[in-house]
Image 1 (cartoon, rainbow, N blue to C red):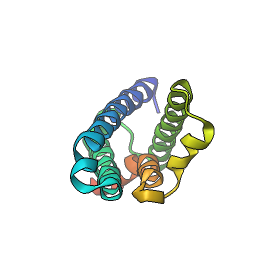
Image 2 (cartoon, rainbow, N blue to C red):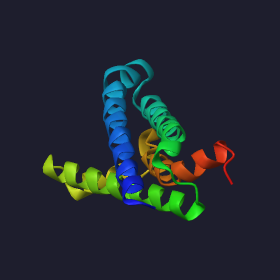
Image 3 (cartoon, helix red, strand yellow):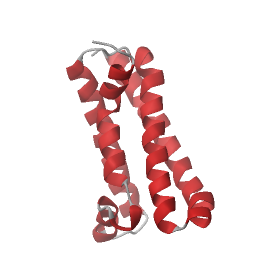
Image 4 (spheres, helix red, strand yellow):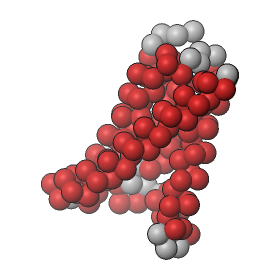
Length: 133
């Protein structure tokens, strides 16, 4: 993939990051109060997964990647950036490593692992949805 494609993939990831932050605000302000903690977490995880896939679908032509290997590398790059952000931000906020790792279970309706899997596979899945070879 070209340098321009790599930069574009990074720009798309920053948009996904902004959506994830907004999703967290929506979860705390609306979903959890309306649905309860478990259903609110489930709804939030499903919503964020759908948003990530939608962003990948809409931006894939702009990124300019079509080969399966490239699409999977983009997804793994998004996953690595997401994990780096989550752990760095959590530690900067004074969270313990145990508290950060608590999100990596399905307890209490947490679908964070599903969101991470969707993040990693989103470019490839979006290409399949576009019926690209």
